[in-house]
Image 1 (cartoon, rainbow, N blue to C red):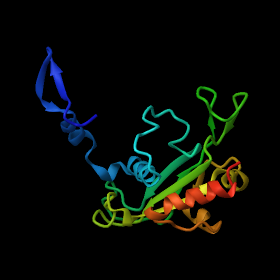
Image 2 (cartoon, helix red, strand yellow):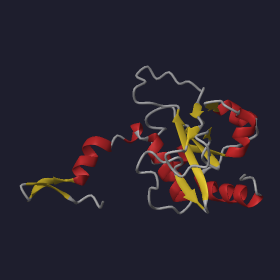
Image 3 (cartoon, helix red, strand yellow):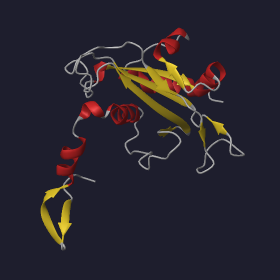
Length: 190
């Protein structure tokens, strides 16, 4: 979509288009952290087309034949009128059943279907400091799924504190690609 596609009625163009719909429904970027995080990681890797637009994919991005799952969280949320900021952040790492898709599990088993997790944190604590399009507001923790499997077994979530306790450090936008390339090249993908 380019944004200028018109809505039609009785085979006639109406005076509003897809970009009007987007502004109406999806222009509140503070409620789109997950989608923005996926876009940021994809762009850092040179991926320009969404690979999970069906919403039922088992991972978000394929890069160098490696399956990457992007998870995100933020300190600031629009719904938090009282501006109480909790530093406890968690990310979902639930195992999935890949039987309906070309997943990696066999015999209807549940497993983590991806090779790498990218845990994305928007660090701003106010609306102004958490502006999602400012990539300086983001930290990225890149963890091989094999590590998650070994240390988290059947856990459904992992906290940011635990990720840090394992020694994973925050990366910035310009470090995402090199860190993922390093993990792939090291043979940590099992």
